[in-house]
Image 1 (cartoon, rainbow, N blue to C red):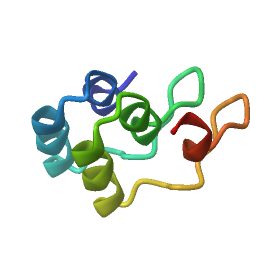
Image 2 (cartoon, one colour):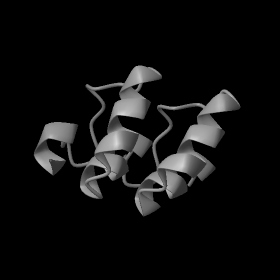
Image 3 (cartoon, rainbow, N blue to C red):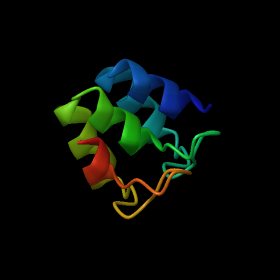
Length: 73
């Protein structure tokens, strides 16, 4: 898990925003295939979701089970 994924799991907007200023690889996925955007959606962190999208998060990314962000929402 990356620091950005952990921040997204926690719904920690301020921390995730700080990590994004350091040019974090936004679309990396964990062992389940979840990206930071998947977790931000799962935790209902709307402000974080918008920040990730603004910074280029892949809206078409799928988990290992083939789920998109819309399946999680």
